[in-house]
Length: 158
Image (cartoon, rainbow, N blue to C red; front, side, top):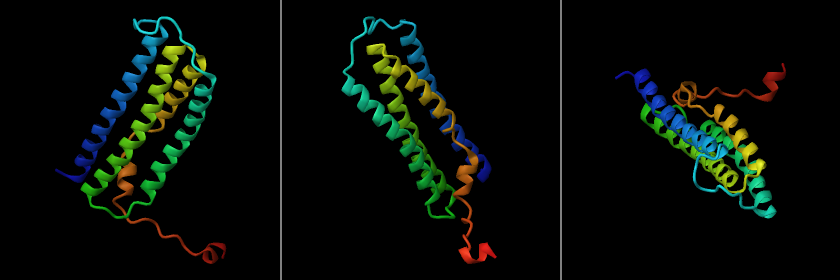
């Protein structure tokens, strides 16, 4: 099998995880939004302290997860063999995807329990963030090539 076919197979596998994760979270949100689940028919209040700490945790988790993924991908030793690049990208991608999935699931469940719209709006924001976290072939290909050498600052100013 050629390297391009292997790369497309790996991306298809990651896309499967991506779409299943988003689909299940979206389905759960819709079921809770329209009261179609028999659970949590009556809203239970959530303490203000829990709400504030969860919002703070979310505001920390989103950029730190995205930055961590980009930094780890950028600092990977290069060039890597195809198997190593695929494994490395897959591990980093799954960590990023499932951290964002866990945060989103927490907000959806707390929205279902409390009917607090803050949790609903954060869930929608997290769904928008998922749009920017799709797996991509260029990211894997970047692990297969030599990184560009940065020139000295003095040479750039001339």
